[in-house]
Amino acid sequence: MTELARDEMVSAATMHHVVNGLLELKFADRQPDKDDARKSVITATKSGHAFMEEARRARLDFYCERLDLLTAKEREIVSEFVRVASEWTVRQRH
Image (cartoon, rainbow, N blue to C red; front, side, top):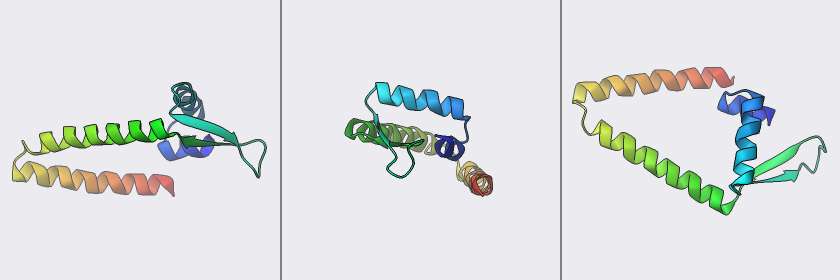
C-alpha cells in the first residue's frame, strides 16, 4: 500500500481508504504476497479493468472536446504546460 500511495502521490491512509473502497465494489482483489506475509498484492478485477477503461475514455473525450475549442496559440500553451508538468512527476518519482 505504501508503494502504491507513493506512486499516486497520496498518503498511505488515503490509499488505504481508496483500496478498501475498490475491494468493496469488487473492482479489486487482495491476495497475500507469496514472498512476504506482511504484504498484500492488490489487482484489478475484470469489472475493475472495465471501469478504468470507461473512466479513461470519458476523460479523454472530455479533454478532446475542450481542446477542440482552443485556438492554435492556446493549444501551444497547454502543450508546453503538459511538458513541464510531466517533468515534475518524473522528478517526483526519483
